[in-house]
Length: 285
Ligand SMILES: NC(=O)c1ccc[n+]([C@@H]2O[C@H](COP(=O)([O-])OP(=O)(O)OC[C@H]3O[C@@H](n4cnc5c(N)ncnc54)[C@H](O)[C@@H]3O)[C@@H](O)[C@H]2O)c1
Image (cartoon, rainbow, N blue to C red; front, top):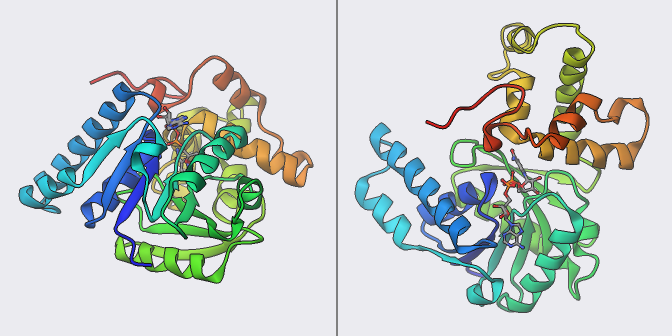
């Protein structure tokens, strides 16, 4: 199927970046958000990020205008009916995602590929209640989406070869690089990354070091571009906790138990960059 129409569901940290890259690469995009104000906020973020690309010479002003003209918003999936590809980027909760996928199945073009940007939930579970689970696949973009090259593609137990090949080819069209994983908790990326972040939070919790020094040790000692504590804030502490809970449920054992300090931060509403406060503070500019 020649894919030209894309529906992105959720316009938060990831969804606005996903809509951004599809619109920039010539696809007609409908960004579906829960409320009009949130959809407008997502478009404002995309515009600001494209302005930055223009200022740096990575995008012409005319291409920016053309990309924004290809981007529409909606507050229901029905308004985007007829899309050939959907990418879901709503919060990391199976109940929310399952409800979204039922709507996607009802409103997509026949044979539309239905992708999820989940960080850790089983693709097989997200697809379970659909009539045709072979079209459901993980398309796991990295944050920030316009910058990061990798898309981790996850095959659920029933994902077809055709859907996998379609999504791999689309990834290349977006100027990104696909890498395929099977449907195990956390896939590859978060099974490796998140226990490291959790361990860094445990180091802070137990007084092994300060957050600044933990980040310095990992940046300068391991050549990581960002320290794990700052990275957790950037990803969103609620997202980090949700992923650790999936790993804990999937594998068990002390290795995957979420740090108490991580739980407390989330319970206190300190979610990182997106809430203005996490392990570090992010004053509004
Ligand atoms: N944050 C990251 O670094 C990161 C990286 C890779 C993958 N992910 C995954 O991407 C997904 C989204 O994460 P995020 O960080 O963008 O979350 P977020 O909280 O920033 O954004 C989620 C958005 O979904 C919207 N939403 C909720 N229910 C909706 C519905 N029914 N219809 C339309 N919109 C709805 C919310 O209003 C919100 O704007 C999660 O599955 C997460 O695990 C996150």
